[in-house]
Structures are given as C-alpha cells and as structure tokens.
Length: 134
Image (tube, rainbow, N blue to C red; front, side, top):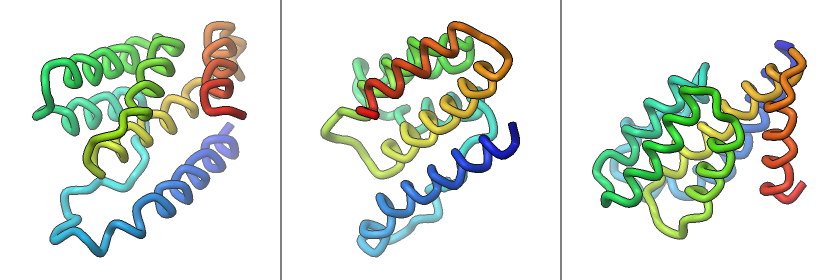
C-alpha cells in the first residue's frame, strides 16, 4: 500500500517538475507555490478552492464542485470535474498545480479504496485511465 502511494507521489513530483521547471525563471516570486502533493483529498480540496478563489463565478463553482466531490469521496464526479478543469486552456501556474495535485491525491485515494474492494473506486479508476488516455 505504501509502495503504491510512494510510486504515485514520485511520478507526480516528476511530472510536476517537468511542467514547472521551464516557467520558474519567469516568476518574480515562487514562495506562494506549494509543490507538495496533498496528503489527503480533503487537503487537496482546500488547496483547490484557494487556488480558484478569485476566479469568475463559473470557474469558482467548478472548483467548488470538484472540492466537494473530493471531500465526500465521490470518486467519479471528482475525476470528471478535475479532468474538465485540467482541459481549460487558461489559468495560473498555481491553479494548474492545484488541479494536478488534486488528481494525484485522488488517484492515491482511489487505489487505496480499490485495494479495500471498493467497486466505486474501481469504476472511477477505469474512468480516470480512460480520460488520461492510458
């Protein structure tokens, strides 16, 4: 179980590094970026809402829906909403990182639930793989 979590976290950090390193030199201050993957989906939800707090009503509503799904363990809804947010062409580096880290945290949670025999988690994982194109 810890091995799966470690592997997913390492993969996420590697992906984040590839995405973030080219843009880091362009920013005046990177102290506001939290590069750590959240330890729980509840923490991910909080970070997601914070990253989108100053957005337009529609975008903020989408972030709130994703955060609620993360908190309530609604795996499939969280997958669909986060993947839709990821597909948005605009957004800040902090927002992109919040969505990415939420997906990583969600995937870890889903894998752990699948190990426990949760069929909802299994369906959500299949959906996540399908939407990621794997």
